[in-house]
Image 1: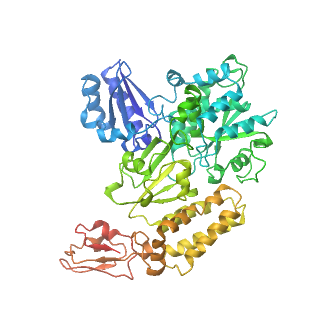
Image 2: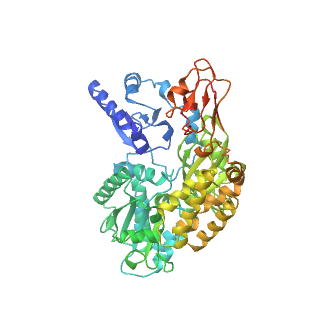
Image 3: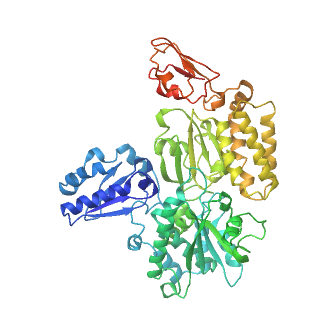
Length: 584
């Protein structure tokens, strides 16, 4: 019998290591020789962590336990591991189980099932068989043809055909070529790449080996942000194990093909998600984009042909080679093939990782899988594509999730972040948040990106403070177009998207901020007014908790807020038990 404890970053953050330690201690104390405790990555159910799966000796799942803190371990050990009966009070509900059942998993097929630190478990589920197939029975052109047939497009944001990039790098002759994995996941609310690296690092390594063979590269580099220490640690373990098994290094599997990988820990610069800025960083320079052409496939790292794909793209490759390009293309739409991993975050009931076929409507992802909006509030919008994307309103909830249809809304699929917003989200403030992010992350090379984003941010900050003026919306639109046109790389070219989409779909909120000096979402602090209604019974609790003594009144009489003193912290609303505080 095996107890498998989910220990991705999300599980560890909720106490999974303590839970695992408690299982080990109790099993050891009771002398249960037939029970082992093991670890795995994130299965995607982040909202239910820590997760514990119990497998029988035949390898079949007997029970999936959720939200298991050390205090619950004793019941599971005594009633299930010893008594043979699962503890139904702790098992996953049928409704939550639907979170997994409604997905189609290719990239995440092993996450939450295998121990990412044991290469034998990856091999047991077919790992490195695709590598063996490629190195022993396929040519470079045949590999690229399978990728072409699959319709795989880059999962890092742009959606560029993977086969085309591989073929371009292959056709450029050089003594040295490089295969680079972009793991510099920088979008707020995105954690797809991190979870794959933590839960199934060998899939990424194998995808890079196959890609290296296809383009004729002998060296691979994984550029991963230093803020992902667990991902880096598991990658290092996986690479060491792959070298021991002769899947990495010289003369792989005795085929005469040489390929090895090293890790470069990035400093967390968002602009390094752009491939030429990433290359500059690899070379020890400041991460700043370069003019194209030449493209990296022609002159990339150290001016040698270089191919760059992101984590999810590489993780798809072993499946495609093993099952054939047509098997992958069977999922998705005509132009957007396969599946896509998304990170559900924000005001959603079931936050976590999902993998669905391209073309599934947004409504099915957010409500069918994600369970809808927290506290059953009204769905307002979803931000897709991070700072480079845009906000899609509730009216477009039936939009299919694929590259073409999402682009039509003004957003982008991007790397896969989905930040869900409810009625309490101010769309002007949301645009301000993302523009503040891109302004800080701009490398400063282009005038329009460096200065234009700053000027746009200043306008948005004025508007959210209630200092907006007539013409601000038009000025934002004018600046947005100039920043898009005048910027060299994708950061500047897409930075205005959150502003443009919020103006496009929520112009009324901008107008309310500017002309009525009101935030319809009751979110922007400077535009709020707190008043006490007749529901007040004079309990004095709000007056006691007010940090600036802005509330006065006698016991058992209605209280009053001095608006000049009020700092709009909302503490009175928070402590009032009688709903007597009106936020307007």
